[in-house]
Length: 436
Ligand code: GUN
Ligand code: FE
Image (cartoon, rainbow, N blue to C red; front, side):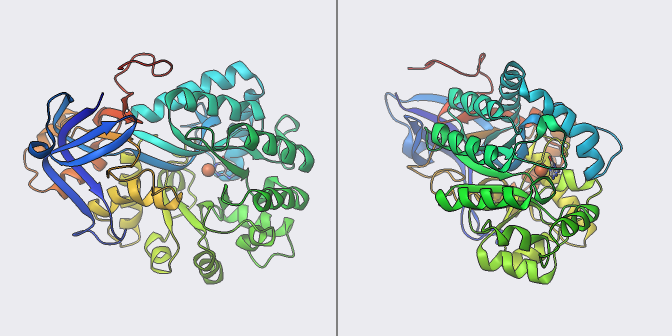
């Protein structure tokens, strides 16, 4: 049975840097869903019909679901850890927490909690790092499949500078990744991402294995970290003395390209920026994380002007919120600190279509158009008393979006639809048919 969602429909298109003409807004709009896909978008008056189940979301906004292109699923219990910058934070908080994912039952419990948190915050697709243990990736993919979510994920490859319990070897990392790709990649809406954690935790032999995997599986995502922290960069260059710079380490193993997602990418030389643009390598801005760990302020505008495709992500657990609204708020503040302005229409483009483009999935998700997957978020700008009071004086759509990103969080997510199914309000969240 087809379902019609009625509300104020907002979707983005065109160039990420444009604002005035980058969106389509329908005041009394409708999105018709048929079998997990969007079958029509337009005026409610034109689309209403006999036999359609109607859900009235007025006065809320209906947007494409948020996309989070860089997040760590084994860090559900790391978020909000005090007092450290990157390398101490990894050793003191993150590695001990990730060690627990050797236990399959822990991994399963965390995977379900993690995906429910994403849904509660309006995020319908993420690119997620798992722990080194293949059972952590199995747990996440199985939980995503049960929810019908389009997830990109991979077990991290790491074979040095980490506790024994978190280390694989070049061969084991390769074999386990290969088996996970065979098991999960392309199954339903799931995609595998080859995930060497970062240069510090992989030997050259392991980087070579990661490059071989990318070579053997063209089109698969590669996700890692790049130039987040000054000490990290110095240490990396001491471990790879032959590399011209940090990016060159990954370049040397064939790990750049339009499917490669580089978390952070803050402290880059002009050569690295030019090389990222030349290869189409994605930079993923992680503003709450960059401020929380004191890593630095990304020159997002400069990167974009140089032609580097840019995503924006939470990076939980160094990031401090699962909310893409809060992430846009941090991106706005990071821009302010650099004397730049992020327009709300550009910000919401970024968290939806922009991130779909960063992941190369813009043909399936990130916009509301017939034929696309029905991943949607319903936003309530009256969700809290503070929001409701401010909304009284709001006059434009852009102002309302800015209010949502500045004051909103999971409370502003009235509903999240995954492949056409309402998931936030639904008890149980996964398994079985519940409508038809
Ligand atoms: N660099 C390598 N691993 C990590 C991680 O888990 N989080 C962040 N923020 N940076 C990293
Ligand atoms: Fe990260």
